[in-house]
Length: 352
Image 1 (cartoon, rainbow, N blue to C red):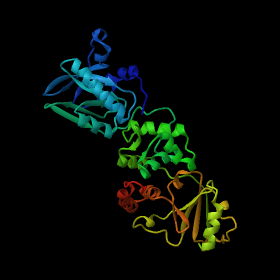
Image 2: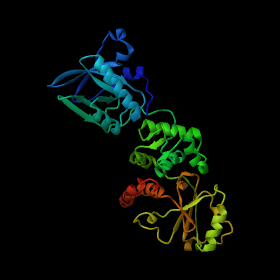
Image 3: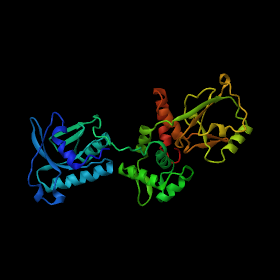
Image 4: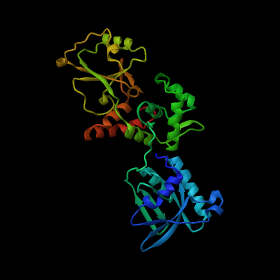
């Protein structure tokens, strides 16, 4: 979300606020200085809609998003409008996503952004709603999404276990993946702003469906370092050697097999295995390297998150149902349909 300052945003009002068929003008009120700060709007807009007429709106500007910040802005705008009789409350932000617009509708408060989206509401008189315009003020600061990559491990953990007594307990739960306390804190702060988690008195996942949507929207497959096709049979002896080679948790692997969790097309004779070090995984295991007869495809990746939540089944590690779901969600129409059948399972505590 943009961190466009209040001064810069207010300077943009005349040129950026376009919401046809509504006509918007900025009122040049000179008495703001005499108002108490708690009653002072950031601006006052006159909004006209022919043939109904014109109404005044008290503006509260917020430079950053998140539903928690939006709700604070809504309450502030309502208080300012109440103190200035004859004005209606209006929240202004650089960008309002559809979820934010729907929250404004629920609260019956107007909101506009500087990108062309918004809600305009006068009880019993008019209602306007527009979404779909792109964010014209994206942040210029490099910022990784808390729902993507290694940081997504925090969200994945909350889908498996929906509640933790403390942040330290959550960090302890993630010990194997060495997710730092500061990373957990930053991710939880964003989730709290998005009203996905409650941090007090316990860390509690409030909206698992929204968290799952965020993880899906932000999912990017891990980068591949190497792909090796070989042939070997998964005998009990081979399983034992793979277990011995991965007793150190720094060496990981997981078989990609969505059909273990739902009705899905199998990969045929080719077994798909993700690993972070294929040579150490296959140490002392005899295999054939002739790709013409390969029955195993080893994909070496430089990432940890696909291994989080993996399941040990009959002596072999498989990717979690959530990882299977995210992989399928990037596929074609058929794969996405299959992924949809996994959704209810993933939203059941302990099954992500």
